[in-house]
Image (tube, rainbow, N blue to C red; front, side, top):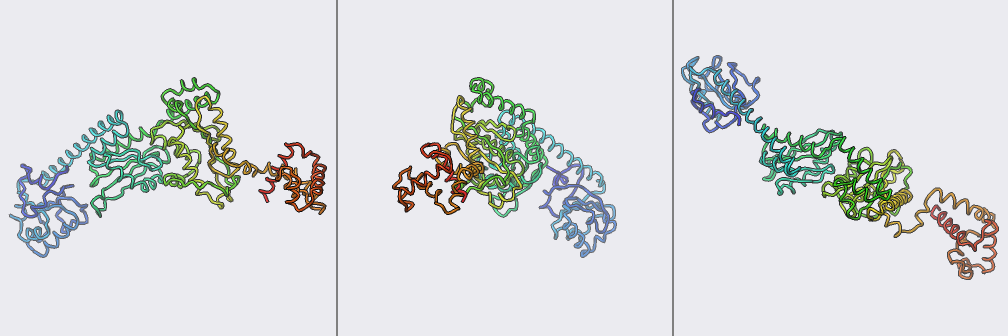
Length: 553
């Protein structure tokens, strides 16, 4: 610790005597300064031991000494050293009384002790304290490095919490707590999620201090530091202590930041290599070579192929090309997904990658993420955290989307298709399922569609496509033109007949006409279109065309 007035008093070579302020000798001394000015306060920073001989002071004037001492105490001067045997044989009573009234420590400096000796003693003690701090910092760095290599981030956090005599927590890119030390700090760390999210909005590296106001017994001082080398931090570190960090503790925190950055921020070359392995594994799976894929995957992705997985295909489309679905799902997104959706900045596919990888890292599961031209392909365990996070994130984005946003067309929007659970041998079929779900998502104006939803829903929403409507309009145009002349209601008659599965009496009753009239109208439909209504394919095309034009009306 830094030198104190008590340590100077106990210094055998200085021979200092305490004349006032005996109960305040434990305060640290930042420096020893000599000044004979009548008012040295403008040159003080606080924490100094001021050394004087009273060359320009009327030290026997009680009122002058009260003003002098009061200004020194107000400026943060921690003590006053008075040299006797120079201008005064002993410390004047007025100065002693003023120091006692103000509670300012007053030290008597004997004539044989030069001020330089006191300054050198203070300087040496400060240097020794700094050396101890640096030495302790290096020792902490070695211990933190050892824990990072043997115990991972959790071991490093435990060592850091011990070094700072407090607690530490690690957050992922979404602001969720990944690990804490000690365990009891988990609830405290969770309350800082909003502060971590605000920190993520600032360019890295960034830091902030929260708490420490002293308004409650649990109000500790917490430092937040971003981790990562990119423009946006990939994670964050929180360090909670009862008071501000000292030099040694500061060294420990900086070492932890560097080590956690190395731990959580993989090098670009390593990340690129893993990505190439993932792409190779995916190609082999799609080519129907699951055993070769398993060999290449090794320990990196091998666990994914031992249980059912899902394939996720995501891409971006212009907002203006997405039709807002009126029947959007009512699934309620989680708070974390809403926060991640609100924080989206830049490429939606990069944001989805961050969400999926963060969720997988938190749960300790493997996930294969492969950028593929203008889309993203993800292979993730069925029922795992990555698939869940992907769905919640897409739903959160969809919940935040508005019709006004869709009308601007100024930015790209995420669209995701998900396959059914499969094994490695059916990966190619799963990829096709995901693409089909992706296509349906685009057509329906959805951001997220699972393949199971295709069979459970209706085929009619698929007709809401410009190409389908153009076909329907072209097929039925002759009938609409005929009806426009007032020579019969062929379109309505055709719709009623098809809806009644060709039952003449039932369809005629619906129209309020005789069945012979309906037969005549159907013959006219065949003549105008040049198609036979006995052909089931023709009846199917006409029915779908009628449904497509009805949905557009």
